[in-house]
Amino acid sequence: MGRPGSASIAALGACALLGGCIIPDSTIEVVGDLVNPGPVRLVQSVPITDEANAECSDVAKELGGCPLPPETVPFGRIVTELPFCVCDGTDQNRLSSFDIYVEDPDLDDDGRPADSIFGVFLLDPLPAADDLSEFVAYSNLLPPTQPARTVQLGFPSYADSLERPPPLLRSWTLGRDTGVDLCNDNADALDGRLEPGVHSLRLVVTDRPWYRSVVFDDDGKLVLDENKNPERTGDPHVGVPDTPAGASYAIADYVFACGDEDDPDAGCNCLGEPLPP
Image (cartoon, rainbow, N blue to C red; front, side, top):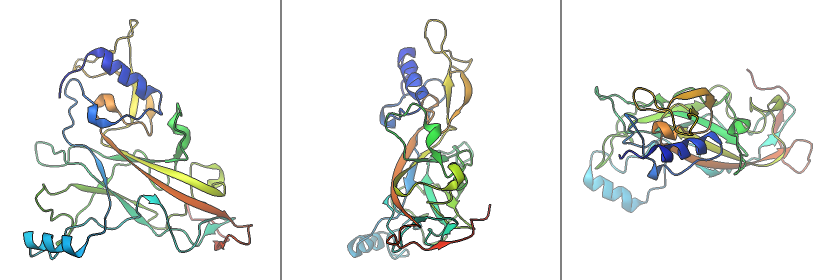
């Protein structure tokens, strides 16, 4: 990667400082030793045709088909047979526990994963928001400072990739003991409950700790440390990838609806007791 001038890095830092400015990582260049050859990406299963499985079997007959990652809740609209609802207690129609899967190909000198992967949910984020922290949601399900854990997959599985390096798959498990009650179990909302209606949920994952503000001198130039990396100050801006540090990131969006328990036509299936802490 090339070394941009301090003006371009300063512009990048100022953009990240605004909190709501997420830019495509395909044009990011970094200074000093902050290189990042492999971007993080979100992983989910896709439908595979019989023809595709036959082609995969021709390449690796022992697999019997195309290696696919484990199933998870698909991105986009969350569709369930029974509706979610805002309840006095909990929603019996809540999702079962599920995993979020990420990949990052970077290795250290010993062949181990080089990057820690962090993730956060943003509930109903506004496109022009200056501060993403007010949209952070479900930190009880996905703590923003908890790195994804390495996934050990057996044979045959996604680990048995075809014509590519073996994937370094990591994951978080959401709602392991309680399931995922999207309408009633948001630890970052007042009393945990959402307003009835349609909501958007953005998942942001990144391969660096969350952005911290860069430091500028009196002339507006970026201050670099002895390793030619930007100096930092203040608390992390959760939800903002640290692009000046070479971070890559990936985004996925979900949409879901919350009915109202008091609406007789909502088809709710509420329980009286709250979820355990």
